[in-house]
Picture 1 (tube, rainbow, N blue to C red):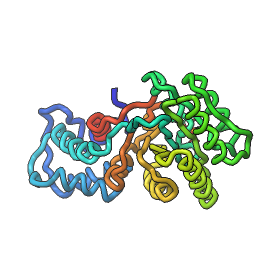
Picture 2 (picture 1 turned 135 degrees about the vertical axis):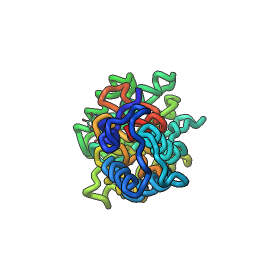
Picture 3 (picture 1 turned 180 degrees about the vertical axis):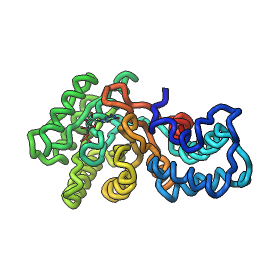
Length: 298
Ligand code: GDP
């Protein structure tokens, strides 16, 4: 079942409990459009995207009387149209090992997502390795080791304070020697220290590319849905530091603000590979635009 990215019924409250087809029809007028915009903005879709969604759904229908289910379906269709082009699983390349660099601010869910991904790829028969590239935070390394055990995947670590680029180098070398299919590399997410982080990431990239000019093959940015519009800034920042190739949105189980995903798709067009819907190892799902849109408009 699709996760509900927001409390169901918000649109229902706005439109009355009239989900039944026989409920009174509503005139699609300026007042109605403004109310719909307001609901979408509250769901964190952002003003720009909310305006576009309502304008598109009203096109050719302004002044018509529509049933509540019709209004919901029209909104959901518009949202789906924005999301469809970006809903793409993480591409798998023939390269071995395929190097996946995972970036994002601390707390976004990088470690958890790496554990979930490792488990999924293992279940698909791939040999996977993890590199604990946030060598600064001992807790992050320990956490990753726990996930590695859960997923049945080796985790390469280095003593606290080791240069992450040196760990990345050793990890890729070992993954090549051992013929791994996939190497997932965790990174630090200390945005307070932006210059340091940028230097750290670019050094990791340099070192990886020295070994394999195509590495990293994927650079995943992990975003926390509960940070709302902040996620947009994080994309801007991390795109400058690394060549972000796709997004994973976490914590969609615990938020009424999943609309930021629509804003992200609308603004950046980056692929959304998967969504996190819980803290357990199986709580990473493919991103399904129609389900997501239906849950969002509730
Ligand atoms: P990192 O600092 O980016 O590595 O973030 P973590 O992976 O340590 O995650 C931070 C917190 O968010 C942890 O308590 C995770 O259990 C939690 N978390 C991660 N992904 C999800 C998710 O999809 N849903 C929920 N509810 N919690 C999540």
